[in-house]
Image (tube, rainbow over all chains, first blue to last red; front, side, top):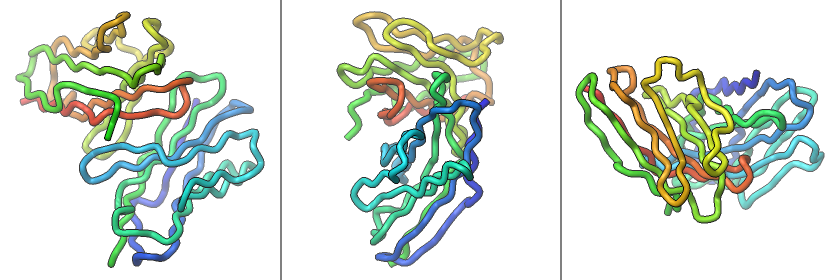
Length: 114
Length: 112
Protein backbone atom coordinates (compact mmCIF):
# COMPACT_ATOMS: atom_id res chain seq x y z
CA UNK A 1 0.00 0.00 0.00
CA UNK A 2 1.07 3.55 -0.66
CA UNK A 3 1.09 6.24 1.97
CA UNK A 4 2.00 9.91 1.83
CA UNK A 5 2.49 11.97 4.98
CA UNK A 6 2.72 15.73 5.27
CA UNK A 7 3.26 16.60 8.91
CA UNK A 8 3.20 20.39 8.55
CA UNK A 9 -0.40 21.53 8.71
CA UNK A 10 0.40 25.16 8.03
CA UNK A 11 3.40 27.40 7.44
CA UNK A 12 3.60 31.18 7.38
CA UNK A 13 6.59 33.07 5.93
CA UNK A 14 7.44 36.56 4.77
CA UNK A 15 7.31 37.44 1.10
CA UNK A 16 10.54 36.99 -0.88
CA UNK A 17 11.91 34.36 1.48
CA UNK A 18 12.50 30.64 0.86
CA UNK A 19 10.21 27.99 2.27
CA UNK A 20 10.50 24.21 2.46
CA UNK A 21 7.56 21.86 2.82
CA UNK A 22 8.12 18.30 3.98
CA UNK A 23 6.70 15.06 2.64
CA UNK A 24 7.53 11.44 3.40
CA UNK A 25 6.13 8.47 1.57
CA UNK A 26 5.82 4.70 1.85
CA UNK A 27 5.72 2.25 -1.02
CA UNK A 28 6.78 -1.30 -1.81
CA UNK A 29 7.48 -0.41 -5.41
CA UNK A 30 11.11 -0.08 -6.44
CA UNK A 31 10.17 2.56 -9.01
CA UNK A 32 7.73 5.35 -8.33
CA UNK A 33 6.75 8.88 -9.21
CA UNK A 34 6.42 11.81 -6.82
CA UNK A 35 4.45 14.98 -7.44
CA UNK A 36 3.60 18.30 -5.88
CA UNK A 37 0.38 20.18 -6.56
CA UNK A 38 -1.06 23.36 -5.19
CA UNK A 39 -4.70 24.22 -4.56
CA UNK A 40 -5.52 27.90 -4.59
CA UNK A 41 -8.20 29.62 -2.55
CA UNK A 42 -10.51 29.40 -5.54
CA UNK A 43 -10.14 25.62 -5.48
CA UNK A 44 -8.06 25.31 -8.62
CA UNK A 45 -5.50 22.48 -8.43
CA UNK A 46 -2.30 23.01 -10.37
CA UNK A 47 0.53 20.57 -11.05
CA UNK A 48 3.86 22.04 -9.98
CA UNK A 49 6.72 19.57 -10.28
CA UNK A 50 7.53 15.87 -10.51
CA UNK A 51 10.39 13.58 -9.47
CA UNK A 52 10.89 10.11 -10.92
CA UNK A 53 12.52 7.80 -8.37
CA UNK A 54 15.21 6.55 -10.72
CA UNK A 55 16.54 10.06 -11.32
CA UNK A 56 19.29 11.10 -8.95
CA UNK A 57 19.13 14.79 -9.84
CA UNK A 58 16.58 16.90 -7.97
CA UNK A 59 13.87 18.29 -10.22
CA UNK A 60 13.52 22.04 -10.64
CA UNK A 61 10.80 24.08 -12.31
CA UNK A 62 10.93 27.86 -12.16
CA UNK A 63 11.04 28.88 -8.49
CA UNK A 64 10.13 25.36 -7.37
CA UNK A 65 12.70 22.69 -6.63
CA UNK A 66 12.72 19.37 -4.87
CA UNK A 67 14.92 17.88 -2.20
CA UNK A 68 14.69 14.17 -2.97
CA UNK A 69 16.24 11.99 -0.28
CA UNK A 70 15.51 8.45 -1.39
CA UNK A 71 17.04 6.65 1.63
CA UNK A 72 14.75 8.68 3.87
CA UNK A 73 11.70 8.30 1.56
CA UNK A 74 11.46 12.05 1.60
CA UNK A 75 10.54 14.59 -1.09
CA UNK A 76 10.61 18.16 0.14
CA UNK A 77 9.32 21.08 -1.94
CA UNK A 78 11.39 24.25 -1.89
CA UNK A 79 9.95 27.55 -3.06
CA UNK A 80 12.41 30.38 -3.46
CA UNK A 81 11.62 34.09 -3.64
CA UNK A 82 8.06 33.51 -2.46
CA UNK A 83 5.26 35.79 -3.63
CA UNK A 84 1.88 36.57 -2.13
CA UNK A 85 0.23 34.49 -4.85
CA UNK A 86 2.11 31.41 -3.64
CA UNK A 87 -0.33 31.33 -0.73
CA UNK A 88 -2.21 28.06 -1.20
CA UNK A 89 -2.49 24.51 0.07
CA UNK A 90 0.30 22.30 -1.21
CA UNK A 91 -0.17 18.58 -1.71
CA UNK A 92 2.45 15.91 -2.12
CA UNK A 93 1.43 12.81 -4.11
CA UNK A 94 2.92 9.57 -5.31
CA UNK A 95 2.31 6.70 -7.67
CA UNK A 96 4.11 3.39 -7.46
CA UNK A 97 5.12 1.91 -10.78
CA UNK A 98 2.92 -1.13 -10.28
CA UNK A 99 -0.04 0.86 -9.01
CA UNK A 100 -2.61 2.73 -11.06
CA UNK A 101 -3.69 4.89 -8.15
CA UNK A 102 -2.11 8.22 -7.17
CA UNK A 103 -2.12 8.82 -3.41
CA UNK A 104 -2.17 12.31 -1.94
CA UNK A 105 -0.99 13.68 1.38
CA UNK A 106 -3.18 15.77 3.65
CA UNK A 107 -1.73 19.07 2.47
CA UNK A 108 0.23 21.97 3.95
CA UNK A 109 -1.33 25.41 4.00
CA UNK A 110 1.20 28.06 3.04
CA UNK A 111 0.59 31.71 3.85
CA UNK A 112 2.90 34.35 2.45
CA UNK A 113 2.88 37.58 4.45
CA UNK A 114 3.67 40.96 2.85
CA UNK B 1 -7.43 28.05 -16.99
CA UNK B 2 -8.33 24.39 -16.56
CA UNK B 3 -8.73 22.38 -19.73
CA UNK B 4 -10.57 19.62 -17.94
CA UNK B 5 -14.22 20.56 -17.93
CA UNK B 6 -16.45 19.46 -15.09
CA UNK B 7 -20.17 20.06 -14.85
CA UNK B 8 -22.10 21.09 -12.91
CA UNK B 9 -19.97 23.21 -10.58
CA UNK B 10 -22.51 22.80 -7.79
CA UNK B 11 -25.12 20.18 -6.96
CA UNK B 12 -27.61 20.29 -4.13
CA UNK B 13 -29.46 17.07 -3.52
CA UNK B 14 -31.75 15.70 -0.91
CA UNK B 15 -30.88 12.51 0.87
CA UNK B 16 -31.78 9.56 -1.31
CA UNK B 17 -31.64 11.54 -4.54
CA UNK B 18 -29.44 10.71 -7.49
CA UNK B 19 -26.44 12.93 -8.20
CA UNK B 20 -24.59 12.89 -11.50
CA UNK B 21 -21.42 14.71 -12.44
CA UNK B 22 -19.68 14.89 -15.79
CA UNK B 23 -16.14 15.40 -16.93
CA UNK B 24 -14.59 16.12 -20.29
CA UNK B 25 -10.88 15.28 -20.10
CA UNK B 26 -8.19 17.34 -21.73
CA UNK B 27 -7.98 16.55 -25.44
CA UNK B 28 -5.72 13.61 -26.14
CA UNK B 29 -5.63 12.39 -22.53
CA UNK B 30 -6.74 8.75 -22.36
CA UNK B 31 -6.56 8.42 -18.57
CA UNK B 32 -9.21 9.86 -16.26
CA UNK B 33 -9.25 9.86 -12.46
CA UNK B 34 -12.07 10.68 -10.03
CA UNK B 35 -11.32 11.82 -6.48
CA UNK B 36 -13.50 12.92 -3.62
CA UNK B 37 -12.05 15.79 -1.56
CA UNK B 38 -13.66 16.23 1.85
CA UNK B 39 -13.91 19.34 4.01
CA UNK B 40 -10.52 18.49 5.58
CA UNK B 41 -8.95 18.66 2.10
CA UNK B 42 -8.28 14.92 2.10
CA UNK B 43 -8.27 13.25 -1.30
CA UNK B 44 -10.03 9.92 -1.61
CA UNK B 45 -9.34 8.01 -4.82
CA UNK B 46 -12.54 6.65 -6.34
CA UNK B 47 -11.78 5.21 -9.77
CA UNK B 48 -9.67 5.68 -12.86
CA UNK B 49 -10.06 4.76 -16.50
CA UNK B 50 -7.89 4.33 -19.53
CA UNK B 51 -10.16 5.11 -22.43
CA UNK B 52 -13.28 3.18 -21.53
CA UNK B 53 -11.64 0.55 -19.31
CA UNK B 54 -11.50 0.72 -15.51
CA UNK B 55 -7.90 0.60 -14.26
CA UNK B 56 -8.52 0.60 -10.55
CA UNK B 57 -11.38 1.48 -8.23
CA UNK B 58 -12.25 1.53 -4.58
CA UNK B 59 -14.59 -1.04 -3.27
CA UNK B 60 -17.93 0.27 -4.40
CA UNK B 61 -19.80 -2.61 -2.92
CA UNK B 62 -22.40 -0.25 -1.58
CA UNK B 63 -23.26 0.10 -5.24
CA UNK B 64 -24.26 3.69 -4.69
CA UNK B 65 -21.35 4.96 -6.76
CA UNK B 66 -20.92 4.18 -10.42
CA UNK B 67 -18.73 5.70 -13.09
CA UNK B 68 -18.09 5.35 -16.79
CA UNK B 69 -16.08 6.89 -19.59
CA UNK B 70 -17.92 6.01 -22.81
CA UNK B 71 -16.33 6.57 -26.16
CA UNK B 72 -17.07 10.01 -27.64
CA UNK B 73 -19.05 11.12 -24.58
CA UNK B 74 -18.13 12.82 -21.31
CA UNK B 75 -17.05 10.66 -18.40
CA UNK B 76 -19.52 10.57 -15.55
CA UNK B 77 -19.72 9.78 -11.86
CA UNK B 78 -23.12 8.99 -10.39
CA UNK B 79 -24.29 8.51 -6.85
CA UNK B 80 -27.52 6.56 -6.90
CA UNK B 81 -28.82 7.52 -3.50
CA UNK B 82 -27.04 10.47 -1.92
CA UNK B 83 -26.19 10.49 1.76
CA UNK B 84 -25.06 13.37 3.97
CA UNK B 85 -21.55 11.90 4.11
CA UNK B 86 -21.25 12.21 0.33
CA UNK B 87 -21.12 16.00 0.59
CA UNK B 88 -17.72 16.86 -0.86
CA UNK B 89 -15.85 18.24 -3.83
CA UNK B 90 -15.66 15.68 -6.62
CA UNK B 91 -12.57 16.16 -8.73
CA UNK B 92 -11.92 14.81 -12.18
CA UNK B 93 -8.37 14.77 -13.52
CA UNK B 94 -6.97 13.61 -16.82
CA UNK B 95 -3.52 12.41 -17.75
CA UNK B 96 -1.53 11.44 -20.80
CA UNK B 97 0.17 8.51 -19.12
CA UNK B 98 -1.44 8.05 -15.72
CA UNK B 99 1.21 10.11 -13.97
CA UNK B 100 0.93 13.89 -14.02
CA UNK B 101 -2.68 14.85 -13.42
CA UNK B 102 -4.53 17.87 -14.76
CA UNK B 103 -7.55 18.69 -12.66
CA UNK B 104 -10.89 20.20 -13.43
CA UNK B 105 -12.45 22.76 -11.12
CA UNK B 106 -14.57 20.12 -9.44
CA UNK B 107 -18.24 19.54 -8.78
CA UNK B 108 -19.29 20.44 -5.26
CA UNK B 109 -22.05 18.21 -3.96
CA UNK B 110 -24.12 19.29 -0.99
CA UNK B 111 -26.54 16.74 0.38
CA UNK B 112 -29.24 18.27 2.54
